[in-house]
Image 1: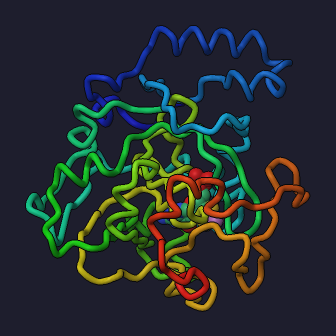
Image 2: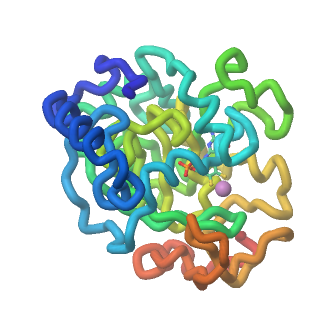
Amino acid sequence: MARIPSSEITARRVYLNRRSFMQSMMVAGGATVLADSVSAQQPAAHGRKLTTIRSALSTTEKPNTWEQVTTYNNFYEFGTDKSDPAVYAPRYRPPQPWTVAIEGECARRGRLNLEDILKGETLEDRIYRMRCVEGWSMVIPWVGFPLANLIKRVEPTSKARFVEFTTAHDTGQMRGQRSDVLEWPYVEGLRLDEALHPLTILAVGIYGEVLPNQNGAPLRLVVPWKYGFKGIKSIVRIRFVERQPQTSWMINWPEAYGFYSNVNPTVDHPRHSQATEARLPSLFRSMKTQMFNGYADQVASLYKGMDLRKNY
Ligand SMILES: Nc1nc2c(c(=O)[nH]1)N[C@H]1C(S)=C(S)[C@@H](COP(=O)(O)O)O[C@H]1N2
Ligand SMILES: [Mo]
């Protein structure tokens, strides 16, 4: 059920549709025995409905089920096993209201409530292929809006060349942060043109519902042509900077994790081939990984003239 009070997401086009929520609960209740086969097309209601429009930028591939998307996660703040976030993240209570600090090279520095960020935004269904560096992939029906919209609102200066993102730091509530498996808080970065690309979104939901905690509630980044780890979760700070920022995975193991981390079947991770992938729930690497995760037509021009072996 919903974890986020309605004060969190109250923008005009974003509201809890109590009526359809109740109706889908009833449908779900009546169809329990069929849950597995039905869930791919018609997931049961697990949270708050969001009002969305369809995006032409969605893939037509079949999405993974709600259960797959919400129980096989990487979110080291809640543990390193794929199943840990689904167990430990649901009891996380995000601070109310959720605020994002806007810092660095931009005209409108300050703190923005999530509510204000969403004001005037049209939320879109964006079904994206997602690929983890470990070799598994999923198709996830995100709900979000272009990061470019927020960036334009805060008016980066001419010095801004990169954007740095930071996850919440809360050792009381995030048990994983009591271990030193990564340096906390989790940080990520994009070049400004990558951040402004229309495929780059900030997500607040999946499957037409508010984001479950394990998927990075209440606000997370989604960059479909990059490996999954670039999709930083539970964002509390966005900073515009002149120089390429550090990222948690670069700090952790720089030879394996570069700043760009574009999906690239020809450049392997030291422990994981990137040539093929297993589309969950299958564990067999039966699919060929595509350059830029299949988004080359849209994004290859961003990297014209760059050596992608060096800039991995
Ligand atoms: N803050 C934070 N963000 C994170 C991670 C993390 O451990 N902490 N894991 C990353 C990795 S490795 C992946 S594959 C994706 C998974 O996102 P999903 O669980 O919503 O599919 O989240 C990314 N974002
Ligand atoms: Mo990942």
